[in-house]
Amino acid sequence: MAEESLLLSHTEDLSDSPNKSSSLVSEISNASTRPFVLAFTVGSCGALSFGCIVGYTAPTQSSIMKDLNLSIADFSFFGSILTVGLIVGALICGKLADLVGRVYTIWITNTLVLIGWLAIAFAKDVWLLDLGRLLQGISVGISSYLGPIYISELAPRNLRGAASSLMQLFVGVGISAFYALGTVVAWRNLAILGSIPSLVVLPLLFLVPESPRWLAKVGREKEVEGVLLSLRGAKSDVSDEAAAILEYTKHVEQQDVDSRGFFKLFQRKYALPLTIGVVLISVPQLGGLNGYTFYTDTIFTSTGVSSNVGFILTSIVQMFGGILGVLLIDIFGRRSLLLVSQAGMFLGCLATAISFFLQKNNCWEKGTPILALISVMVYFGSYGLGMGPIPWIIASEIYPVDVKGAAGTVCNLTTSISSWLVTYSFNFLLQWSSTGTFMMFATVMGLGFVFTAKLVPETKGKSLEEIQSVFTDSPPQDSTIF
Image 1 (tube, rainbow, N blue to C red):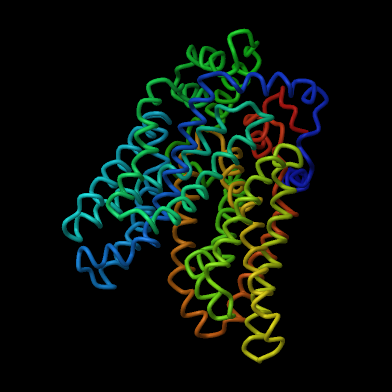
Image 2: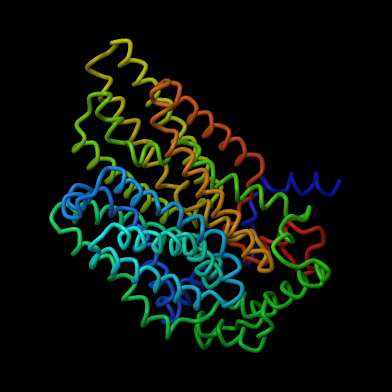
């Protein structure tokens, strides 16, 4: 059966190609061209802005409530309306990016972020505060998938993983920076500071190139080679790369001449890549990420750990894991780091469950706080290593350009809904059973490990067209995927 052979091929390392290693040095040199550096800066500022938005509410809660005379319900709505915006952004992100292009969509998202920060900074009443947060949520819902797509479609194949992973690391930088700044900077001034990444991005958008894959998709074939030359360097030979992009785009269009629109994604041949993207993106959410993120203080307090010490050590470990992931992703590959990351998160959840069990039964009272602290550090360090950036990197790599927008909508909706489910239910689950809650999260991470080991392919060192041809029934003749 063709499907069986396709499934078996997914566990093979797709990076073994005899001619790729000799070109690594030239690829690294080519990636330093000004247009690519500027595009990477745009993507990184977008990720930094995302982190600032996520990290804004925690340190500013008491001061905002006092200055605007808000109730707990008012502030809770202000914090949670971000998720509403995320869902709205997820619904429109794919269609918008396909309709107007990657660069113009980045214009829109950064404009929304700027308006949102200004609305918060100058809010005199709760409605303007909520409006600003809603606009930010819409922007994040669009850009959380658009950013990895844009960088993956521009970067050389041997640096695509590192570039995308490093860009995603800036989300953590933004969160940590706002946690720290929020303790010394007034909330209105902090909102003004949050607008700086978007102010940096807007002038750069006049200088960055459009995605060559999107240009090929919308029939602007003559511009593809020129964009690739600007990205790889004027002396580079990009004729083969341009030809591969144009040929694969034409091949996809010919295969699906009678199928258009959003529901094209739900054809049988896209079932596996759609499943891979949805599962990888939802596993960390259903594996307790938001429970750990938003209720870390509760976890530490319940097990007798100092919150200040715990927050500092956890932030350091997560940042270290993210940096290590950037360095290793294009050496050991996405799949290997995913497996290590999922195993670490599984162990972190299991150790947290054990610490709650010991604490409840008054066993090993001196060691329980240490075990709880270590478990949270292992969880976040493992998350930073792989499960933070890599699911989005793989999702940006495995979908052909004709369904990438629809896939982005589905993936974004998946992460928004699964995130909301865990955030909403976490306190209820803790009341039911603290040990049972984290055993559930450990089970999810264990199942994610098995799923990755069985079905997720290695995409390191391959062009997007080669990766995507794995999931079609009749790949182009010149594909070197196998």
